[in-house]
Amino acid sequence: MYVKRSNRIGIVAAMDVEVEAIKSLCSIENEKKIGPVSFYYGTLDEKEIVICKSGVGKGCCAMATTILCLDHDLDALMNIGTAGGLKDDQNVLDIVISDKVVQADFDTSPLDGEEGMGLTFTAENDLIAAVQEAASENRIPFHTGTVASQDLFMSRREDFQKLMERFPDSVCSEMEAGALAQIADAFQVPFVVIRCLSDVAVHDENPMEFTEYVAHASQQSAQLVYTVLKNL
Image 1 (cartoon, rainbow, N blue to C red):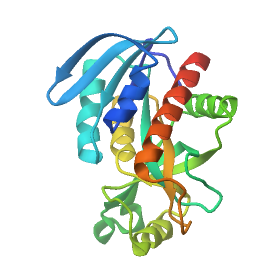
Image 2 (cartoon, rainbow, N blue to C red; image 1 turned 45 degrees about the vertical axis):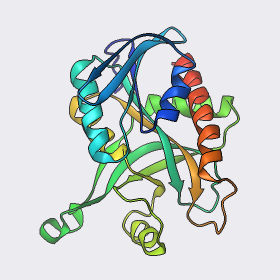
Image 3 (cartoon, rainbow, N blue to C red; image 1 turned 60 degrees about the vertical axis):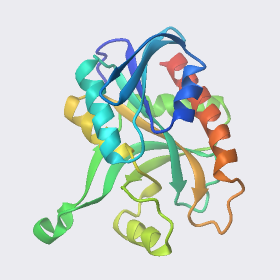
Image 4 (tube, rainbow, N blue to C red; image 1 turned 135 degrees about the vertical axis):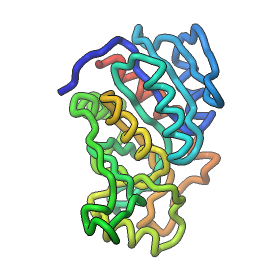
């Protein structure tokens, strides 16, 4: 059940370009650095927000999200960024919205059997619905499902096959959301993961190079978050 704690929303992104796109829509009033993580405070559509750049990978994201949860009273967490699509009906720049997040490279199955494969965390239903509504309002195609998180940039066919054998409900693969979901769950902060697809593993060709893609994706993600906060 979604319980409001304050009016502050935490937004976590892995890359500078994603952070700057969100900041450009905000009134930033203050910033500070805790350890290696920079935090930016302000408002977006009259909602209090705090933005931070996590860096790439689950270790960096775990550190940033832990600091964010310890040092701030958050109403919710949103994780935005890039992912690789896994389904044939997906296209570059489509949005993936998490209903669950699985740490796909967590494996204690030699000790625990099948229950030792993956750690799974559930996103907040009200936040999922808000992102779906925002995507529809902005006419952005979206897919809701399991976000597979692992410290691996999938580039080999065998990586894709292994993931889909273990977690066939996965709709995208990325490198930070598993850590954010686990930390959010530990601190009882509602969360949702929003990913823009940079490529689709089952397609032979993808229409954009990453440098072209990332500019489009960052702007699209920022506009989507703006609409979500407006609708909350």
